[in-house]
Length: 143
Ligand code: CMP
Image (cartoon, rainbow, N blue to C red; front, side, top):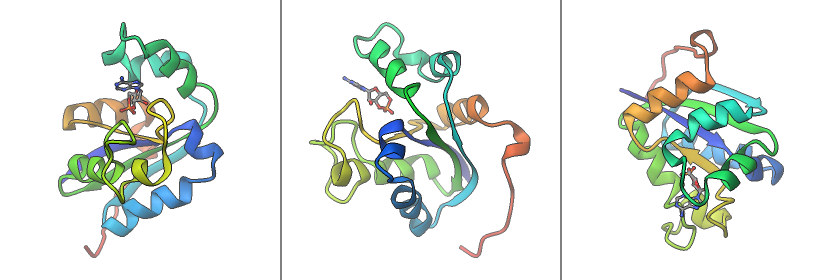
């Protein structure tokens, strides 16, 4: 069983797509174990995107992710990291497979609606950046 970190970015929140996006992971069979609407501080954004520091899109990325509220989520399930990445689609919306979130709703790499952790290690690191232990729940699910 894995946990992963997902985040509806400010464009997804502003476009009213939280419900649409959450529903896709629920219908897939993953289990939501933490969620909150929050404003990301610059300090938290820098920790989250540390691996991108120095890249040409880094400053714009920080500016964007702190520009409005995000919907931070922790999910649990078998191979949750890979399953969530598959539902999200590739970073570039033109390369995202039809039926994925980014293919269906995004037209710009910088405004691609949702972040999904790309490895188990990053998932745990990111969950710890955005959630305290008492904000995560544990419950049984039929499947
Ligand atoms: P995400 O995978 O959530 O995290 C890094 C983000 O940087 C990525 O989504 C894009 O929104 C943004 N980005 C902008 N340009 C690029 C690029 N050339 N490669 C990767 N990510 C990029």
